[in-house]
Amino acid sequence: MPTTLTLKNIPDVVYERLKASAQRNRHSLNSEAIVCLESALLPAKLSPSERLARAR
Image (cartoon, rainbow, N blue to C red; front, side, top):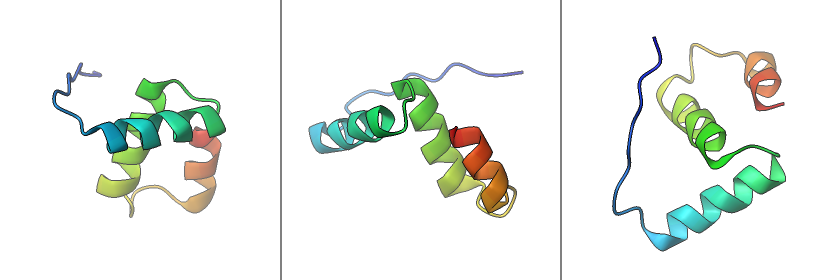
């Protein structure tokens, strides 16, 4: 079951990069954050085609 996570004290530069990335990928901030976390924490579990499909 999905869990809710609240992040505090995010550096401005990180927030701005996440926001810009979300806009480029036509994602919400939440969706983009999840994609970034999955990429960093679960790189072996998603194939490149699966990662691309999720990003779309």
